[in-house]
Length: 352
Image (cartoon, rainbow, N blue to C red; front, side, top):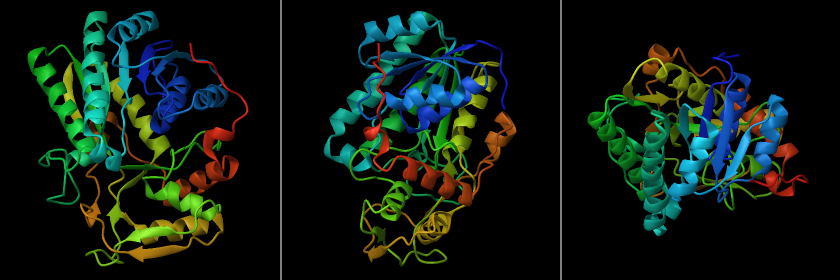
């Protein structure tokens, strides 16, 4: 367990989401007091009921939108937080192509408002949820933080704009403590099976789709392309257990408290697994067959993408500990216990 100064207060935007909820568990376990600010547009309040049950501790919940500066500033002030972890954002690549203005408004404008609120409240420690999408098509593997930055869709572009904005902010005022965490492919769930990934509609990510096929919600997995230059012809990605990712955020908050800086860090395992390896591993974990069909490559997909994670080990003392079997076993436990996600949950917490 990670320990911290008891009672340090932290403000978590988007804390009811997939990565946010797992991070809230780790923050509570580490002794932080947590306030979650969320509009629940893509998440369920039930997730936070379960976070508190898992941790055996309570947190504060404020129902609000980042773009409402008055409400946001008041909530941040009331929380007494000394640091912010910023998860809140829309994240579906396809939807971002169809509705780019929605993504720029929610992700970029929302972050501008958050930074304004932080400046008003004199809170200058921020951990930002970025993405490996800011690397575009990899020019080298594994991908180091120094890799050239580019983005191929509006979702990725919003992450890159926010990163640039944070670097510009630090350039103008070097008293900020900013950590930019670039995630690779988060998967899995808490080992309790109480919280996990609950995609709305058709999953955008591979593992929830595989899990829904295994449990009988979907007929088969589409494998987009089996003619890539990879060991088995299917796309290779760096999958990281969501609990490892959550622990990385706690370590980042602790590290940033020590000195003013603006630093970008990869959070990944440094290993790549192919689509077919993921399907086989999930079959082993679930003891269920996972039907799949091979289709043509999707436009914009790349053959391989995996992290060079050494800087996170050096600066945070963090490395991913959970392997592929645990990722699949934990995802399957969540899927079995919650076949329809949080939607079927009986208890509902009224946000205030």
